Image 1: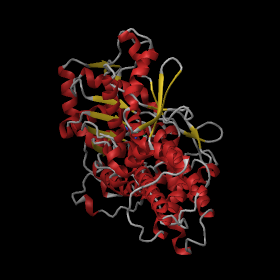
Image 2: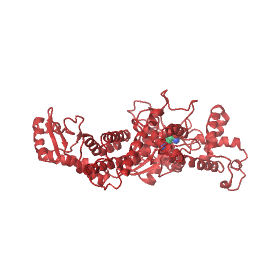
Image 3: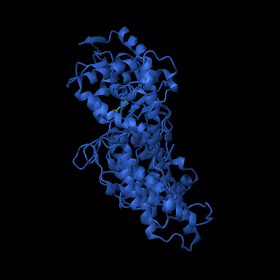
Image 4: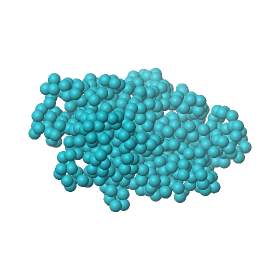
Length: 582
Ligand code: ARG
């Protein structure tokens, strides 16, 4: 249990001693610091139960509080709000406990097994801006849940199954009609074929093929047929498809790697579809599958729906299996292989209807038990200044690689040539660029869109990734310069700023718990900024290294160490790396 929650528990006992029985105490950091650092509102809530006036209740509680030397500045405001502050000694004690073990102020939650689906990159297609948020938010949520005690598995859920791949194969067939993959009489080993195609080729072929399919009816038809062929494992087509997946996967991995994003499971939609027949049987046995214009669908509408709910598409009229069914099959697969308590889908908010259909169908088919949570964690898009999803200058889809390069150009300008050598420059700029992108993404409220503003994101000032990195590096450098300062304890807390830092540190578990409850990261990103800004204020107010009073200097260094460690913990939680210098 976190120190904060321990404090709440102790306060509960104190309220009980005053003669009032409460179930839980919720301690609120006060926004009226002049009245006290914390506020206890329980007297107001006890009024109903004990039918006396709140001031009387508050007075009794205050009597007990005053006996406890951890609390000072105890007063009653308004009709019965109790305000109080923590004594200096007690605050120091708390800080020293956190200094000894940072986890002493983090709550461990009941262990739950969660599969997080947050990749969604598409094979043969460059990762684009749309995949950025999924990767950032999913990775950070995974790290948060892990920190708080969950057992989490990230699944890349590669888009390796859909029609676009049929078009890609069709285009390759046009380019190289003599490849053995297309020769029905070929008896050799497909793995030995020298395929003259790189990942860059694939990234060119994909949009070309999709455009052709839009214009040319027979091309479209061929592409569709090829899709059915590779989906059904037909010799040649299936083998070429597999090669394409391999080539592309390597590149996708490398890009995720740059983003400090990694997956425990590298399943693709195709792996999920190995469960399709079983899924279909379950659905048929439950009489859920209906024919509709040649397609096979599941009705997922409910009587009280107040918006149209289209049926879930299992098999299209041309025989190919749909995107809907890939997600449905994935639930069955995850149930069988991992038996999770929860499955989280960190996917663009515009797919909300799709997930509603999938979840309803999964419930109807009873693919997982009722108490398994299926949750779509949607998010808004990163937009350009025009308010539409961010594009390249000529209006095309911006690849993630180009986006990173764009930001990198900007961060390169701000690298300090006095501290970073020419050889190290690129590596540092890369780390800072990723931090700029990731922090801007995570500090934005998950549910809404935000605008890509490169100057703002890359700035060394304000609520930005680079500001946090710069400040954190400076803390580290102060600690290094202090030489062999013994890992002493904090002995004094001198200024109000130090007290503010201490209270912010104490509040960490509330931020983490709330973020997990709402599956959002903006509060953690804000917290990081607030703590860092407070620390920088303290840094400007005091000359730590030249301080002559040893007890004070040591206290300050320990405080710096705690803030540094929290920053490192939270930056890592957000998936942000810290360079040695910048
Ligand atoms: N590959 C899809 C796309 O790029 C996203 C997949 C999202 N995840 C899922 N389980 N459906 O649009």
